[in-house]
Amino acid sequence: MAGSVQVSPGFAITPSSVKATLPSNYITNFDFLNQYLPDTYEKEFERYGNRSIASFLRQVGAEMPSNSDLIKWAEQGRLHTKYVSCTSAAAAAADTAVWTVADSGITACNFRVGQTVFLSRNSGGTQSDKAIITAVSGLTFTVAYYAGGGQTIPVSTTSTAFVYGSEFKKGANGMSGSLEAEDSFFDNSPIIIKDNYEVSGSDMAQIGWVEVSTENGATGYLWYIKSEHETRLRFEDYMEMAMVEGVPAEASSGAIAVTGDVGNKGTKGLFYTVEQRGNIWAGGNPSTLADFDAIIQRLDKQGAIQENVLFLNRNFSFDIDDMLAAQNSYGAGGTSYGLFNNDEKMALTLGFSGFKRGYEFYKTDWKYLNDATLRGGITGGEINGVLVPAGSTTVYDQVMGKNAKRPFLHVRYRASETENRRYKTWITGSAGGAATSDLDAMKVSFLSERALCTLGANNFFLFKSA
Image (tube, rainbow, N blue to C red; front, side, top):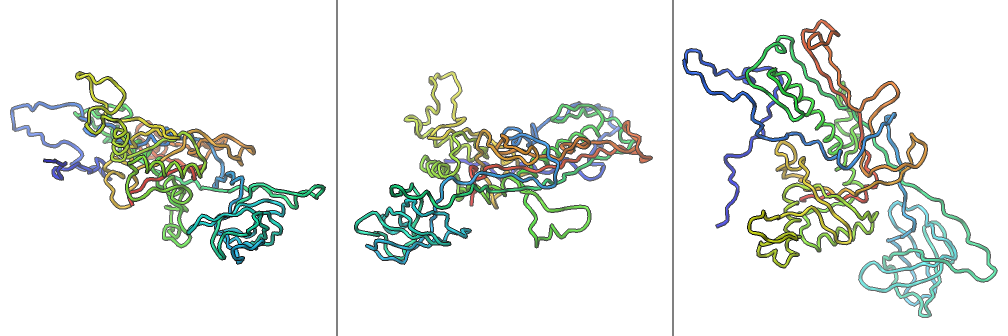
């Protein structure tokens, strides 16, 4: 009989942090009327391991300074022109025809007289024609067919057209007109992220009997050390999550209308950018080679970056392991997954770090998608993973004033010769060594101003459940 993980007892997501100092923060079950001394464990037990999730951007990107409220960059457009929504009023067998371009966002056809064009109907048949362009005006171009039978595509049938060359008579003038290179321009705005921790001077002088520790190695018997370092770790996680989850505030939104010190205009995070300009797989995880073939065919139509990294939640990672195991002739029996000698004394390796099928895919677990207090277990709008191209791309950097190599994903933080806002921290008050005011406390403040630049978003894939 198949078993399952039981709902109760479940996993705890109650945070260890609170807004104020309460008795529940401290151990109070001391009974001095009891003559027997309890056996106590002096050191905290780290039952959740490393609780920080910040690591994604460190692995795939870089950090660079910026000194503006707006970051802009240019990305190359396509080298060749292809229109996918063209129709002609000419009937089949016509020797010439006027084609009208109806592609979204196109204001003028950039075909030129003398170019040779390939025409193919989009659906309902396999007819295609080759012709030479004899006139171009606005959104229309006139062609003369090479085939003696004339046009084979039926009248008013939506078709695709692209130029494959040109042809001119002996002694003729050159090509009429020229094409100007056009870039696509994108931008993003940095946001200011803040946090702070405050402890009174009296609590700083209060020692405890529990030795506390945090993920970054801070230890001691002073409770505020733990709280301050957890605030620091939490802030570092926020710096990454804000770059991943950030969205811009729309003109009519409530966020942009908020008055006071909070809010501004938002920022374009990774998920938002890929949903707008990248590729999306929805309806469940791709778990067969046919599924990945469809992904590869889409990547072929984009930048065709050969090496890619998959950052996945646990279920998606297992689905890929199972897919790759099924390619092994022994996989169905569960006896071997990888290429190794099946010694009875060795551990069976049931996972893969990557695979190659035309493209190279390396996979790794993304803790952010598994953490129960964050995206782990989310059922509405669940994101199961993201495909990030490896390497770098060339863009025009306005600050440097020249083309520069940049990772596909990188963070720009505000900085100048006198102010660096990558990760600021300072202490105010009169306790803990600070002497900036008569406040009997130590206040540790954190600040960062940054934005994520997602270059070549058309090369990214976002994997969603629905």
